Image 1 (tube, rainbow, N blue to C red):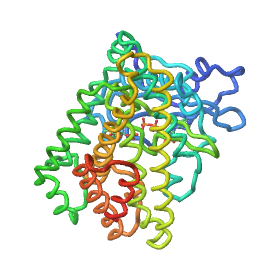
Image 2 (image 1 turned 180 degrees about the vertical axis):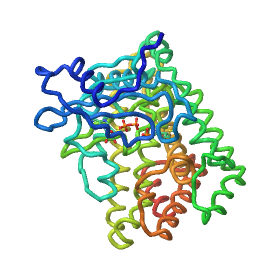
Image 3 (image 1 turned 90 degrees about the horizontal axis):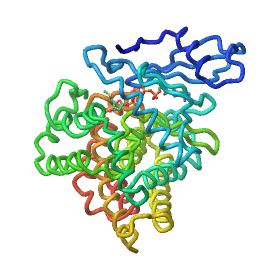
Length: 399
Ligand SMILES: Nc1ncnc2c1ncn2[C@@H]1O[C@H](COP(=O)(O)OP(=O)(O)O)[C@@H](O)[C@H]1O
Ligand SMILES: CSC[C@H]1O[C@H](OP(=O)(O)O)[C@H](O)[C@@H]1O
């Protein structure tokens, strides 16, 4: 019988005392639930000085932001912990450290990053972290290369694909990214003023064919162990530091999905900036976002290419020229997936604060419309955007 029970703050303290690995666990005395994501409970565990020392995260048996009417697998806690443990092996600098996890209780104890800030909030407030984009590119290159066929023995790769089968969380992505925005669905969430723009998505056969191809790749291309939800709310930053958290959507999928999600969230911020800074001040902040996208992609691609040259184990994949040809396909996928992230965050169930917190209604609608237009264009022309400079030129064109 399952021993699962939902933790109270007191349970979380007792659990952290037992499994937090601290020298003096009795110093842990208090907890506060701080979860602001869509899915889980997150407790900060405080010591006698009121300092947050460790994090206890527990999955609920349902989707937190919707309620018990939407049940969801507890196995997502295992998948999150194991994805982060695997990623930590390849990029310890840029992955949160998991100290302990228990699949029965769907709970994990992890490194406390309270001295960092969630990147999304910093991007909205236009606080610049000069190393963040390169660090994110480095994280993605390390974890995606080392879990790909370039590096893993084929037997290990297949065993890992099996370990990370994640059907329920993938189904959420499959529905929210590739279905809901292109049909009438009760989960969709957008202002009535945008009805014509959203109806145009439903009526666009060419667009829906391109989205079908992206969904098919998401279903079937087990290229590497993805983070699966690497948006700016899943990234902590501090001066010179960056760490990824929240990998419960981890599974073996197309590498371009992680790259596209990351770029897509920088572009969602780009679209929302005039609503926070005003049109004039937004211009230079926007240039910064474009420069971050350039750095993110070039760091990822250069690092992946270098790892492929040095460490590819498969004789056929080691053929000179193959890794760069593969990266071209990753780039094309990334642009398409990026477009789907822009659209689903504007039309679907789950939005982003970069646009939703804009107070002026007309401005908020204009920013949403911008994200939809840009997303649609990127999905349609993904195959014709050869490189990151062309992407930036296209983004400027649709501003
Ligand atoms: N390791 C951590 N250190 C400090 N705060 C954290 C940590 N992990 C999560 N949090 C806090 O909890 C919030 C929700 O965490 P997240 O993993 O995104 O939850 P969900 O899975 O529900 O999306 C984060 O935005 C952050 O404020
Ligand atoms: C019904 S889950 C919606 C949405 O929430 C997840 O984000 P997070 O857990 O980081 O808040 C993910 O992006 C899902 O698509």
